[in-house]
Structure formats: structure tokens, C-alpha cells
Image 1 (cartoon, helix red, strand yellow):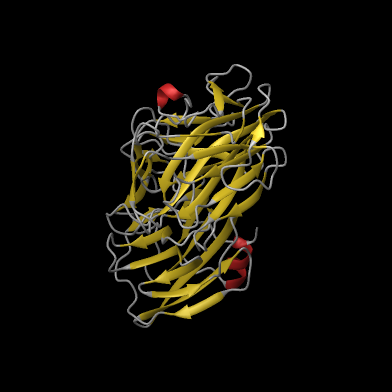
Image 2: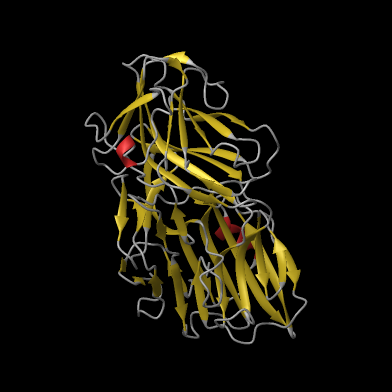
Length: 440
């Protein structure tokens, strides 16, 4: 197997810079910009904030364990759920709706929150024979936009008693298609029920194990009715996994409790990295990772190969994984996720590699000039090589490399997941080498 001309396995960085392993001269080091702080999962398995401009080496691994660091690249996002960590009535959380429904003990010392602090909320039902729930943004107002996809999420941990195992999250009443909700089992770490009274192609629920008993539960749905509403995320205590929206009335045992923390309401079809809030919505800016004016020895001009090991989180939005260009959309070669499929693309011609399942994958993509056009060859996860020929002219200049962003200066089409490694070769690897390189 040839040696790559450029290799990044995220490990070494400083503010504004991500260092490459190859070349060692500094010619392959990437510029990193992000104008706000953002969170990651650190090597101890806790969520922590990193300052603006610092690449996010994220150690999250499915199953609640700490994995190898991967580069977390995300678009701009905004958490509309205010007071995301302190869930009490003095912080815009509604606990009663006219009758006592739940009580909340904040800053509990009995269990650490997902960020390793004593800021978890212990939620307990009141003794009344009623439904037991709470919701955010009670003293504020969220302007929901019809047709927009939203994702609500929060971290929960199993507590004690009959109402300490199951949790339901639901959207603001009458704002979303079919009034959707999802039920989760915090003992087994599974999604139990996903429902709504009418169909919604964007509706999905997910549960992720963050370790130490904590699960991030999320619900994605489409807004069907625009308007301002003083309701963000709704969390409902349940005593059975099949409870309908808003739960079933039960006489609460005041010795029961369940833990909650880190509420988030955002646009988009996946829950992005946690954005802490207090009295107002907070925005996280996009991660922009690029290398411009790349030396000719890093990028093959008439032939070459691109490689990446990356995470997929299924969604319909177009996302760039790795691009070579002249800094514009006029000359470009790229790996892109679009219409739920991973595609290898030169200029406007694409070959599809199918719809990879959520999780990590490897891809190797070679290009080669053939007359005025070019030929593409790509393998995903060691599968058979897919090939194609471009309809347009071969790119005339390639001097810019972008990781997880569009090929020009815009901060759009950002990747929305983690990237474990990326490499560039100045030669067109053989089909056998493409298969070997991309084999999991």
C-alpha cells in the first residue's frame, strides 16, 4: 500500500490548528475556526466545554464507554430550551400546571451529571392521582416555524421506584404533526414507543448510552403549526412502557425519583452536541476545518485517492465529508452525504455508495483523468468498487482541502458527526487497494 501524502488521525492540536501526522513539515496542518465555545466528551467520559477555535477531539463511544478520539464536526446549532440544567420553577420550568405534578431537587449529590458535576435533577411525582410531568420555557416563548424539523433531547438516568425507570419526552401541544411522543426504558436503554396521531416522515426517536447510567433520549418531528408557545421539551414520568402521550394518571409515590439533565431543543433531524443554556437560547457556531494553498505534493492533480473513517447519523441534509477544490465550487472532487446516501463526486457527476447504517464506516475514493474528463472509483467498507465517468471536464486546479465542510468559503453543508481519520494520496490506488483500505 502506498504512503499517503497527507494523513490526519486527530490527536495533536492547539487553538486554531489541527496538526497532520503526514507531512511533518507543517504543510499539511489545518486551520480550525469556530467563533464560540462548544462541548465534547473528554477522555474521562464526561461532557466538557472547550473554547472557541479549539478542535473537538471527542471520546464518545456507543455503549457508554470511552473510545479513541474522533474529530467532531458540526454545523451551527442553537439550543432553544432555556435553563437547560436547572429544572425548577424559578428557572422557567413548569412543575404543576395548577396542581402539584412533580417536585424537583436540583444539584443533587447522589449522582454525578453527564458533565461530572453535582447538577443532576431528581424528579419525583407528587402523591396525587394525576399525570406527572414538567416542561421547559414556561415563562418564555418559542416561535415554532411550520415545516421545520426539530429535535428535542435530554439526559436521563434510572432512579428508584415504579416511576423511576421509564421516561417520555413529548413536543409542545398542537405544534407538531400528530402530537408526537416517545417512551424510553432507562434500565434496558431502549426506545419503547414512538407515536403520533398522523404520519410524519421525519419522526424518529433515539437513545444513546453516555455511561454511568445516563442515556440521552431524543425525539425528532416536523412542526405543523407555526406560532409562539411557552413550552419547549416535555418530560413525563411513567409507570409502564406503553403509556400514551402525557402519561397515565397514577397515585405518585413520593419516594420515587428519576434523574434528568441537559435539555435541548434545536432545529434539525439529529441531536447535536450539548449546548448549555441559562436565561436565553445559546448558539454554537459551525466547525470550519480547512487547508488552503495546499502544496502540490499533497494533492494529486491528474489522479489521486481520498480516504476517511467516519460516523454516519442518518438524515436528509446534504453534508460534505472530505473535499478537494480550488476554493470554489467550479473545480471540486468530494465525498458527500446527500439524500440519505454516501456519494463520491467529481464536478457534478456522482457515483452512489448506498445508505450506510448509523455508526462508523470507511471509504476509499480514487479519481483519474481520462482525456478532458475523469473516472471515479470507490469502495465503502470493503465492498465491491463502484465506478463512473464524469460528464464534464476534469478539475483544472486542486489546492484546497476541507474536512467536513463545503468546498468554498461558506460555512454550509457541514458534516454532523465524528471523523476518526482522513488521508490523501497523490496516486490512483488500484481497486484491490481501495477495497483493502476501506475494509472495516
